[in-house]
Image 1 (cartoon, rainbow, N blue to C red):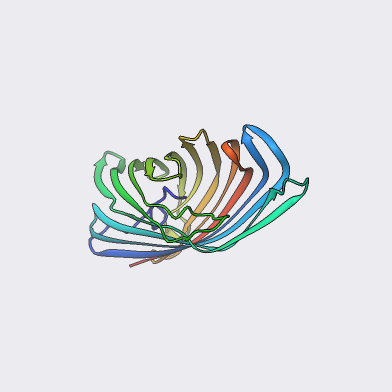
Image 2 (cartoon, rainbow, N blue to C red; image 1 turned 45 degrees about the vertical axis):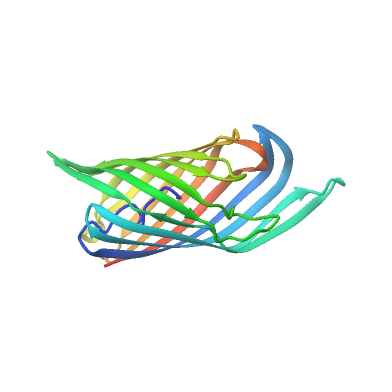
Length: 254
């Protein structure tokens, strides 16, 4: 999700357009991992997030986006070094992300799409806690994307590269989405299979994949529901894995 653009990678694609998006995200991870091995089976983490995102387009090829997450509730179980479980909690605002996506559009015979380049900035807002979902660190990033669609098919690919200071590891993320388009009541909607691969320079590797449904209700209001599963988890330090994520998005475009 962190690589997706408001609004749902779709729009606005016109001059002086803008949009707002709310995403309700819930994720559950079932074990504590170290490397690819389960260090503590049944030590869970549950995170409930609300994301506020927005976009403004000066020109269809130049946009400004922001992403502001809020931790509604987070709970994790850690070993207490006495043979039991220590339960920790987190809540509050997360780190914001600002970006300037630049698009180059093309139209070919039966196929249209775009190339994208995106400088990004992570702004620390989360604060300092022993357990925190967001890291409260400045970061800089670059994103690249390529997508196209036909009357029935959609293809979206992206890569992002983040560089952080202090203790947070740098990370690379690669995404590939394949979609089939259909037209209920004349609107453009899609069923997609999405795959994300995350690689951090501390040795962490995660492969998540799953289906998504995007529904354009009336060109103004858009809904998206997605589920992703950890098909492969490797943690460079003791951390949770083997989980699932569910996201429900509501977007408004003007």
